[in-house]
Length: 192
Image 1 (cartoon, rainbow, N blue to C red):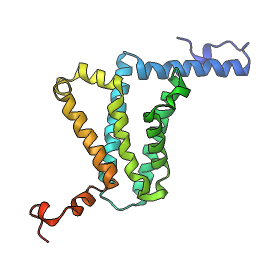
Image 2 (image 1 turned 180 degrees about the vertical axis):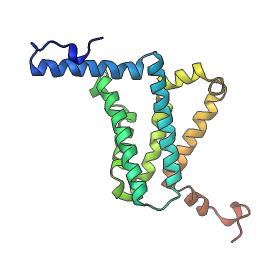
Image 3 (image 1 turned 45 degrees about the vertical axis):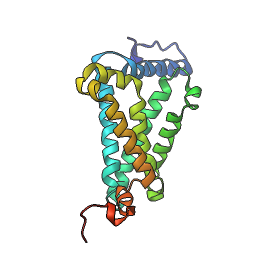
């Protein structure tokens, strides 16, 4: 492996930057696509980030807006933007990536996190992050290899996740809105 300090000084600045960029690109590709232990761990860390993000979306949908939540929105937005940027950097066809719905979903999610002052108007769009989680073929393949639970319940997991996204998008991430919209006779035993 070539390290930046090993690059001879005889290269011009532009050439040196290009070499550094290619080294960075190779390291990022190894994390996202490599079968090394570090790459597998990195992708599981991304899975954990995606799950924590979805849990954050769910939890904050029940809370009033606050400075702390807005600050966490920006933190999640920056992390998702870094992930998005890294994926774009290592893409073999970056322009074709913008034809995919998942790319535009990520863009919308990033904007909704980085613009928390827009309030809850775009909050429901964050639930779309789950779709990317489900469409990451490498992660799904890895989960099939590593988890017998996932192999046995893959269809159920996808069905529940798709249903959750549908509910969040349709209710604007306020699940109790859907519940309160039900006729009283269908709500069960909630006495007021």
